[in-house]
Length: 300
Image (cartoon, rainbow, N blue to C red):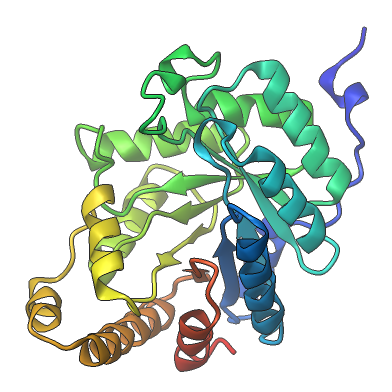
């Protein structure tokens, strides 16, 4: 009988879980960056200039997002294949518009490229195809975790929400779902963007109380472009401190960048000082703000 393991190579290049656990045991928080696949060749040049620049900071790992409905599948895979030989790389994988067969194909491509892990997330349907998730064969991140765990020996990461998921009833429900993912094979988690220290550590405490012992890495968004970040926060449902919003609303562009970056760096320091296993910095494919945060928090 042929099993999924017969279909895939069993060679694992690296382990994000081990990197995180080794960092925790050595009291050395990890530094990592997230990129997204470019839309065109010009965007690719910007991306890889940023990547090369941030590689000088010796990140522990990086991740590459994946477009809703596979809208940038080929570019995403291309980016992963180029980064993986240089640094432990996580390839994102979503359910939107996905079948079991297409997901298995992508997992195989990731593994052949030598990725360190996949990040299994449900994803949201694109605006131009609102029924993409409903029409796909896979509907939840849990199904994707189960499939990946059966099909390969790659580390599996998942998303986590310091604040209640927009479609969830409460944090208790979110933690129950996170526990199901851990039991299904997930070995680490990366959070959605958030802006309050207490929300992260409340999530960690709730997860620990539920028997979840995998590392939960906070995702950190540098506030170098206040309007852009506040718009993203609104879309994701993340609560931004009212004092910060008040300051940004009356500041010039130059002042708002300074205020936002000072906040981000202090926020990152507080997370690290209180015991976060590391920081996963959302770069938006730009290196300056990400490098500033990495250095300002003492991780580079």
